[in-house]
Length: 160
Image (cartoon, rainbow, N blue to C red):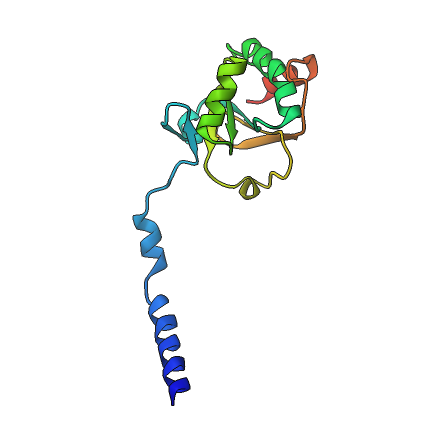
């Protein structure tokens, strides 16, 4: 008898858990930005439509990431009149990002990425996604790169 009660209770719990309309619940929820700048403001990639965007995923503990940063600073300077935005998200905490930048003092737009890198199929750092001015990802580069090399600068300039 006791066993029948448990089965009935479990059945009711399962049925009641499935009774909502998930589509309606999803429509009600607002999209949450996955990026937060060092001042605590949310940042959305869609806010950069009309610009080309280079998004370099990195970490404060990643030696290849840190090694390529001077070339990224230089590339950002070279491309400043080309309509490029450079963003540098990491899953590290805002405190770690701020401490890192106080130490290194790079003129880069660092962001905290609040989601999982697995969601983007990033399994090693650095990983860089390049978006055209329509907001479409057109290139992905995994691993450290000499961003200010003639080859990479020409590649970035060719993206429209």
